Every structure is written in structure tokens, then in C-alpha cells.
Length: 188
Ligand SMILES: [Fe+2]
Image 1 (cartoon, helix red, strand yellow):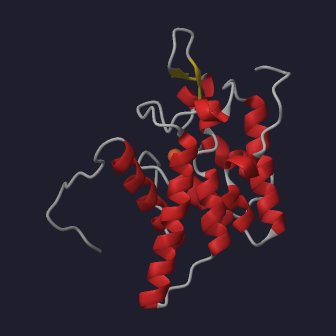
Image 2: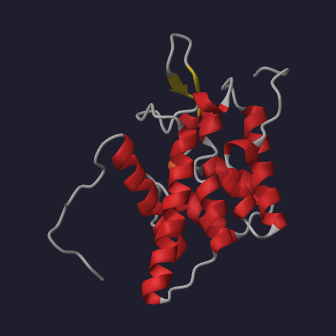
Image 3: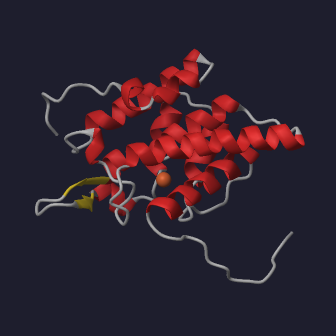
């Protein structure tokens, strides 16, 4: 880690953080990113990829997931009157991939590689752990921990389902189709 590296100006990279109406939650989101950034070996945020398999940069991916999720929530509210917690949705979108900063690092021969933590722990575990330490509320932690198809469980809230689908849709757009049909119909 470069000790001379300047601190992260999160709002410059993710102006969506200012859309969180609760100043305490917005501050927690900034604090989580600041802590993970301080531990990251990436030289700048633009060098962080969407994932080890997806070289597309993470910042536009995360911003797109946030915008998609907000649009989905607005459409559902307009046509069905569903209510979601907008602060929870935005905070979850901005934090779901934050631990990529410490799950990966630049590889000596170019590209990226997983860190020891990235190999040892499930994706997003560290973001959820640090977020919990900063007091981020449980509904946001739930989404961070369940947003990935690799997670041990599915999201159980509407906000969580929206983030999950927004993330998968964005990955389909920037990388490749993620959808696999395993059964003709399986519903509860
Ligand atoms: Fe993720």
C-alpha cells in the first residue's frame, strides 16, 4: 500500500452518496469506503475491475447498478404502489462491491489477482463486516451479504431482490449473459 496515496473522495466518484437522505448513513457509507481504500493495494479507484472475471471497471458498474435499482423501485412504486426504503437501496448499491478493494490487488505480471482475504472469504463478507463495525443498519448488511449469486442465501427483501437483479442485469450488459434456466417452472 502506498502511504502517500491521497484519501478517497467518494462523492467525486459516486455522487449518488449525496442522495442518501440520512446524513448518518451517508457518513457510514463514506467511512466504509475510506477504511477499505486505506487497506487497498490498487493505485486508483479506476483500476478496480468489476470482478476477477470481468475486467470492466467497477465504478461505472456500481453507478449503473445504483441507477438501475432506483429506476426499478420507481417503476414498481408507480404501477404497483410498492414502497421501499430508498436510503437502504442506495447505501446497499454503493457498498455491495466495496470490498473488491481488498479482495483483489494488481498482479505482478499485469491484471489482477485475489488477495489472501479474497481467497479465504466469500465475496462481500468484508464489506458487510466493516459496514457492521461502522453501524450500518441490518437491512443494508443483509443486501451486501446476499447480493451475489455466490452468496449462501438469497436476499429476502424487495430492496435486496432489486439490487440482486440490477447487478445481474448490469453484468449481462457489460460482460456476458448470466441467466441459466435450470427448470421450466419452480415457484413457491
Ligand atoms: Fe458484488
